[in-house]
Image (cartoon, rainbow, N blue to C red; front, side, top):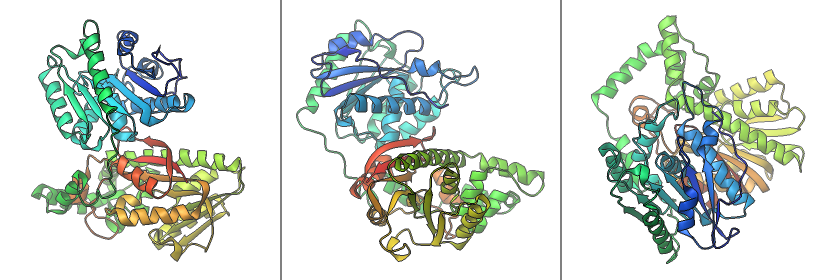
Amino acid sequence: MNAPVHRLPSPLVGTASSDGQRALVVCDWSFKRRAPWQELLERLALPDTAGFVWDARRVLSGDPTPQRGPSVGALARAFEAFVRQVTLERQRALEDVTVLGHGVGAVIVATWVHDYAPRVRAVVLAAPGFRDPIPVNVLAGLRGTSARLLADAAAIHAPTLLLDATADRRSTVAARDVFFARLASVRKVRHPFEGPGASLLTEPTWTWAAETIRRFLNELEAGPVPPPDLLAADASGYTYEEFRRLQAPGGPQFAAVRWIMRTLGKLSRGIALGWETGFDSGLSLDYVYRNQPAGRLLVGRFLDRVYLESVGWRGIRQRRLHLVRRLSEAIVEIARVKRPVEILDIAAGGGRYVLETVKQHPDIPVRAYLQDYREENLEAARALREAWRLPGIEIARGDAWNLEQGLPGGRQFDIGVVSGFYELRPENAPVLSSLRQLAARLRSGGLLLYTNQPWHPQIEFIARVLRNHEGRPWIMRRRTQLEMDQLVATAGFTKTAMDIDDAGIFSVSVARR
């Protein structure tokens, strides 16, 4: 579901100053009863801080069906919109925002911090319900999201306070053990509470909770927590170690799966195309975008449907929807002050998402320059351009790692696009070089749309079984969202917005030069 963005209420609690520099934003998951946030925030009495509560029940009442409630990803997306609204309308920096969640609300907060990598002041997680038994018609995807957070907690660097509840289920406490141990936060503190998590932030524990939170935040005043430098994460760190492990030979089970996909699997048109051109090729992605199962015999079409419905390809199609929407918004924004709008896609593949978006705006003059280094991708883009009658589109061979080699000299653009490309290169130096070259080709105030793959549940299967466009094992090094955002910032851009699919696999971000 697309979670709605709610209007920003007045501060729930104005402490020393309702218009103070700082903000405390609470993610409220209390779908059965109203949580006593006002009492807790009053006891906190944080100076120069205004409190805001985001009520997940308003999202729950928006669109859940009797069969399936909203996903954790959808709620994290709505929480992102709310926090951004707080910072924009109340003129506060993210660095001055503390976020707090309780139970499942803490899982939503942790998901937001993991997926969106915000530079917040601090995170307070009260008895996060990683293993809470929530019915799927109330909340979908809690188990899968919790597993992802536990496996990838090292992507979280924000100062974190974990308020634990030792009387909760053994599996829940064990999950918190794993999560806290793997957190990469330089400043992380865990305080036990001898009772059930449900009563952790209620009377009579308000005083203890308020004092513990206040003490943690006061300790941060001793000195700012510097953000980690992840530009060298391609040479050390946990994603680098994962990448090295994937380069080692896999077990015999992967050889068996690879043999099946090379034989019976070729009855599927998508799998056959992957072996012909590479599963990461522009032609393969264009086939996934079309999402029309095909193959030889009934078994081939069945295998193709299973192939196209894999979690990774579903995420790819969601990435395309996010990219088309953000590109459409960028075109409209630029068109308000400048026409024609000029777009540069440095690794366009078949160019479907750019051409599709331009087609949606026949009233706005758009010039687009699409480049790619593979002739079959250029031919596919030209075929779409002719079919959709888009004369303002230039399509040419080019090198995304060396833009000066193919681009017309001195030409400037309003919007730059790089989708699904940097994810193919594990090293950061060439990515940063490409971003800097792209920044030089964008006008001041121009917009960059870039993608990232911070997580993939099938990354080992892909590395052991599939082949890339170079005919080699498709081994990827994940970049956390914070790492990718730091590369973009180092190249001279300021991030302004982001989307990510519910499984947390593919993100689409917007940054301004």
